[in-house]
Length: 219
Image (cartoon, rainbow, N blue to C red; front, side, top):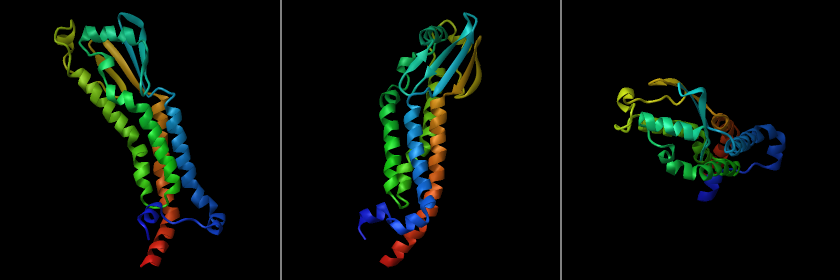
């Protein structure tokens, strides 16, 4: 058996597909669904930060998409300078530059997985499954970096001291109260991750008997 045949796995006959259509179609539907969710998530925010400050009684809101920030960015940048935090423009520059292409690539890998009926499908699915975790780890790193590299010349730097804001949830920074929330884009990526994980369970259930039969014929 060729290497390509081992990677792609056994093909399902028309008779087998007709008899057990749901068994084989469920993993494919979940992979397609995960791919669609990832693509749609590009249009939605991944992270939302709300801040209450004495200077802004109505509060400030910054909405983070995978490649840009929207909302009260200018006002919050002014507060950042006051506290000693760096500029948002300097954070996650590389990640923002590749985010759209990377997520499109994750969706494409899931679609490519439709044609792989072996355990190698996990190689194509794993990046999408891990993506929400990677996003959270990267976001937490940048929040830590901001909170631990304050400008010592800033008016409130000494009073605030080093801090690490949480990815999600409330926090207090000097006289400022913040609330970080997951955006709908992130929730869709998380849903895609769960769907793909379930697809892998169903994929193994569907194709493992065919793989074992194929391997036994080759012995």
